[in-house]
Image (cartoon, rainbow, N blue to C red; front, side, top):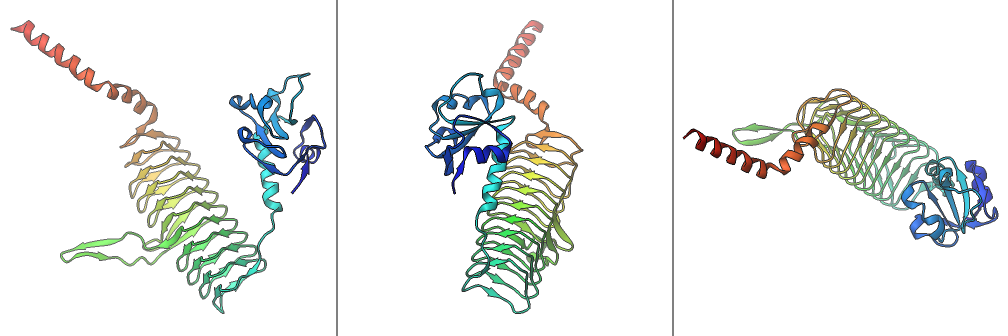
Length: 343
């Protein structure tokens, strides 16, 4: 698709410096710019590319533009370049042709309910008593179990497995190879070994949730495992049975949350965090990467380390830990000198 600088400036409310008829046919990172590409500058470390870039058009934050100076690319000057560029990305995505229809090789049970505008890719399998909402995209090789409900305008990417009776809200995205509703890790130790406990619940994913690739969200033993509205889950994350995650949480890659733990709203959880089972985490908590959480956390806490505690205290203590060998040697010398003084 081809756009002029003036069309872009009009859409984002920017001021043009340069040729308003400059055409762009693609986008690129500012440091890899080519003729015909659009990029943006909103950080000090990229300011030098106003002189160096080969991009034809650059969206730039107002504070970087010097009065009376000429620039090689055509500039579109806005208050803050990054959100303006994001608006263009959303516009471009919306302009892409949406897939619809049922591809050859897909299986849809006769009593499944498929609403208007749904796409079902080749070799997808949709079981009985399932409902798929308007505008949802089911990509090839997806498996959807019995009695599943998927809302409107969702995207379920290739290789996803959604087990029986799980519920997916509207406007959700589930990336490739994630498994929703597999059995929770429930076993009872007996004299004969570990006996499996039936996992009879389901998973409920509320509206506006995005789940990365290769995640596992286990069904509840009884009741539901819940992912709250607006939450964003990165790749390679394990969420165990009966976990309850509130609204607008962000959880980074390789995090694991053990069974029956509860998270409030607006929490930020870093990569490789481990959270033990049966604890409660409040609202607006920040858990730094690679932390191990084994106690309840109150609203607004910021924690780090394993076991995790207040992040500022962790950093202060870590300075001492790095010097622990020298500190021990000093203490040993002081003790030896003290013993000599008393001999």
